[in-house]
Length: 385
Image (cartoon, rainbow, N blue to C red; front, side, top):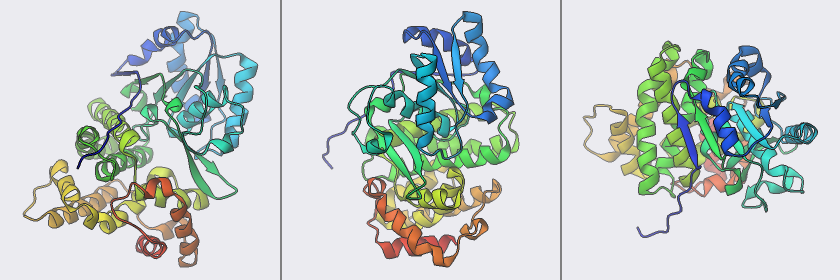
């Protein structure tokens, strides 16, 4: 098919054990004089913050810290962060943590140079001016937010997660040090790792996929599927942690350009309404959405089993596609990720309202390989109940 391809990513990616030592030089390269760290209290209490900021202390670079980020953060958190940014007089922002601190850091960056309330920027290409420079340091192998032009924030009034999409959200630099992930508990390793794998699967099967994004998505799927069990079972395995971090990065690059699809559209309403962690919500919905989507691109879904390295006696694409779904279900089982919405208090009477929330996420449904109706969405939720 002939189509125009636009591929974008961030200017600098530094990856490998011990690379956090390069943070001072990255700040100087961006002409930063004082940094604001955006993180959460878990990162502070774990000791990760001290290990990340030690190189700055040694280099004499001043910094302040905003540690008020919460899981699935409300967009109002950005206003609190902006207040500290202005008070501190910081001119560069460092996002440290999982997807929530990184998304708040990106949002704070653009709100610092644009006057409208952040609620007016939900959507695509609505931000008029470039923000402050940002450096992202992920401490999970999950969201890939360090290389995407997207920030996801919760709107509690509408009980939805909403996205801001703008090239101005691309960070200036990302430092990926797998040593920072060695202490991740198994449950978080599982949920974030599945989130990264889902990014790769959805980017690969998106209607906006291209040869370029497929290249990143294929390697991401292979790395993540083949290393996630090891990282879960033995969190101190640096080789597995490094593979997971690379896989998450590549999946982020893939979906930043191809987009994610209906799995995320289903995860947003249940995450906002029932406070299901994002990676868990995605994992819950993945096999059910995959089964619905199979006939939309049978060849690619069938190829996923090959990418996973699953021996296949099936000669047809559909048979291999069904093997890929079964493999996903077994992986979630091995990782002890919850597999039913009822485990979080969701009832059949909730499904129609949740499905209506799905249908509002038009930005993602437009990428889905199969058209979907409200009735389809209700049925898919019911399968996951």
